[in-house]
Length: 176
Image (tube, rainbow, N blue to C red; front, side):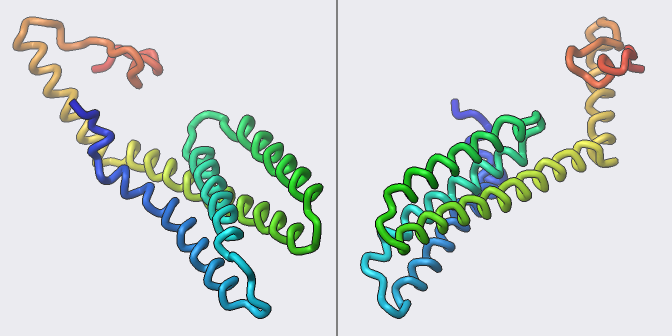
């Protein structure tokens, strides 16, 4: 049996913009380089790493922004370490100004992708929190709880029960 989250198209639809944005940016950079004067030889060799770093920035930023834990404390130092190491290695190997410019482009696109991804992830997380505290969702949950209580009473079980991890347990109440 396939898990429900794999077949939920709303979940997949929210992830579509990540590779789409990276692909569109890569195509835009490729087009720009293709028609640049003087002509750039092998623009694909430049575009692929730029697109990969943009995608990496978008994904890591999105996951950082979406997280409810303090992922920022772990991810941001790792990101800065990655960027520093890549810049040091590539700039050290750069034989001319064009190579240094490419390294700068990698870092710029990664940073922009990380910023956009973390902002987008934060917005997605906030929309989930807003939904969970909305009046409609609270009413739906109360109707579910009423059905469960009625079912328990029909079975001869006590109507009140404590679900581990429920809001009532965290507040110290038994539920009414």
